[in-house]
Image (cartoon, rainbow, N blue to C red):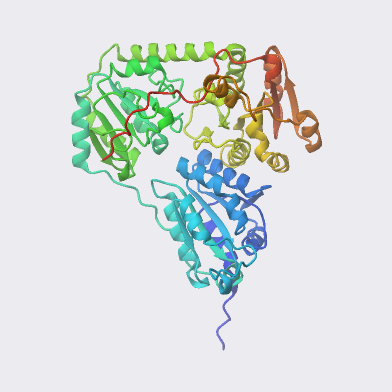
Length: 562
């Protein structure tokens, strides 16, 4: 009797099966001739959801936000050449944010690859481009090594410090027939263990503090329980924008993301230690590294290269944020004797910062208050780069979980709409009933306007709060402040969004008087699927305080590095 012939499948199907083994529930992308073997298999297998974006830039941002809000691996698929280039902006944003994401792109047939033939769809040295915008980039060289290369790519994406990883698979390899591998399980992701002696040393330093502060960044998102143990011992807390919600921002022991307001900086000078965990202390959140932080300044990070970066460290521990904080809490139990007035002083500094912010909003304080009441405690808060986000969105609305907040960390406009779709899709699968709110300005919003069709097609449960002033508001403010009020290239032809939304069958309401915003928000919250709430800023007026970019500080020497 002859041995039964082994069933052969395409490498494309192996890719789909491996993603299933990685527990990937959703992928985003644009179908093309250079990824069809993968997407055909995905569709035929029927296990994963595929969200067809209208462009690769949008697909990448969707996968980015999906990963940030769910804590799972984000996956996007693009074609090769120009299409892979279209994903570059979203990849840079994901790299800036440290998002664990797998970008699968095609490549031309291997016989013509890297020969300089100007073969259609080829980008010269695409792999080098991908390496420059990714944590790592790989090329599948043959059908037999495809799975192992995929395993390596996923492990790299998920290993702290996490980040987006690209893998290009030539189309002839995607189409190649091979036996379905027996072992589809992904590689184990290492967790960096801190050294016991380093924890002992750090604990001894902190035990002497009477007014200790904890600064949490995005690298500590999974360490909320351990952080609360330190707060229970008397620590105060502040976060970067990426660290928002690790501890609920309504907790009286936290400054939230009010990390660089003058009353807060003054408060820092009364503190006698600061422990920075999983944060890069980015320039726009530290007044270009001139923000006066408490000393000793102690750093914890899974990236050994964070040692001394931006600010000189008085001590540094390399390790997973949760393991370090748990180890410290164990060692500090019963040893902390904090100043009884410390948390009251923290609360006073926060209240001063909040009052200054709210006063500067002018009429829009009513919008912020209405939103805070409307969203409840369980929501996603996605923000594009716009005056409103820089003015209040990065600190309000108050977040209650570490996965609720997403914004364009790298400062590129136009990502918010696609990010909100990714967050809404993720919520539908992992947190049903959790609505996504997207704050965007009209200047950036139109950049990826085509993704509105994706939102409708996918019935993404999201409310778009479109701040429409028919121009680049922040650029106008900068021109007023630094260019003598000379206005160039900032007024924008703007669609009639009521008509546009009507043509897409997208629910829409325009608010020209903020007395109406409460009822409008109630309608938006009750509406399933996507809803656009357009705020007519030309009718409502300006903010009381004009935001003209990050605070300008006197230029000093570059920060000390290790």
